[in-house]
Amino acid sequence: MHITLAPMEGVVDHLMRDMLTQVGGFDLCVTEFVRIVDQLMPKRVFHRICPELNNQGFTPNGVPVKVQLLGQHADWLAENAFRAVELGSHGIDLNFGCPAKTVNKSKGGAILLREPETIYNIVSAVRQAVPKEHTVSAKMRLGFDDTSLAISNAQAIADAGANSLVIHARTKVDGYKPPAYWDWIAKIKQHVDIPIIANGEIWNEQDAVNCQQQSDCENIMLGRGALAMPNLAQVIKNTELAMPWEQVKALLVRYSGYELFGDKGKYYPNRVKQWLGYLSRQYPEAEALFMGIRALKSADEILQQIQS
Ligand SMILES: Cc1cc2nc3c(=O)[nH]c(=O)nc-3n(C[C@H](O)[C@H](O)[C@H](O)COP(=O)(O)O)c2cc1C
Image (tube, rainbow, N blue to C red; front, side):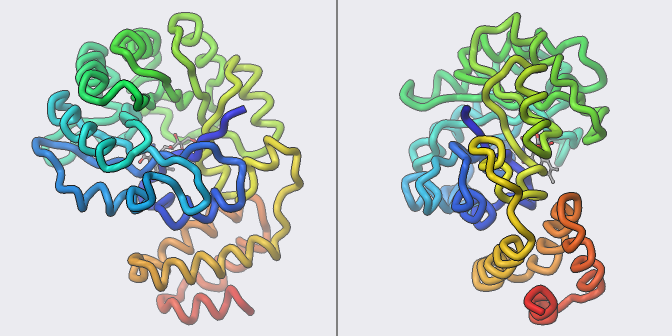
């Protein structure tokens, strides 16, 4: 089984990728998306989103990282895709799942699921631009408003030459509301012959088994579940027990060190609160800690509470 750590804007940055891949069980990471509008992005933008490019595109623990692009213009996406792999990205992932409609008059993400032809053109242009030894993948939801174009979109992605496809088994309108419709992935799978990775609503080992059975996919992607239980990939792959709270607390302390001394210091209070929000799902202690730091704004005070 192959497990990918999901791209999560504002949450899974290189520090989180480093920590979660050290905990283990992940075979691949995908970055937060780089929004492409109408230009070739400067190299520094790719390095900011994916500092692992300075390490030949690997996390410190040796897990490959793939840059994700979001946008509507096939040519600009293609040029930027070429740049990203040239800089060391392990292939390219294309985002057809982001819920935002338009940003700065630029479309991208799930809204394109209304236009299978545009999706075909984008994937095709990117596939042609990126050297063959690098994979091009796409990540889609089941649709924007409904599932009526789910199969057409997946076929467009496959016909355009993508090497694999991640399916987050919900429409944009479904948002993040449970359930994820894993059986829809199996339906789509009957119509496309590229490898499919199932995603959405996997929080524990049993969810993973159910998802694999219902989606007919061996390979999965984990997002929020991996933040709620940092060793979820190991729990699923190697039947480890959920990490005890004391170990999670040690990770929180480590994360605090990373965030404070890394380039994200100013975001630290919000980031750690956000992570505690996810951890609360699995650990009652996280909820108590969250209540304790909720009103705190200073990193030092927050760290003291975590360590107390
Ligand atoms: C805060 C947040 C940020 C996300 N950012 C991205 C992103 O940048 N690119 C993307 O393709 N999906 C993004 N997603 C979607 C996740 O990758 C994933 O598909 C979704 O959370 C469902 O999987 P899960 O139930 O395992 O979390 C984001 C989700 C969340 C909650």
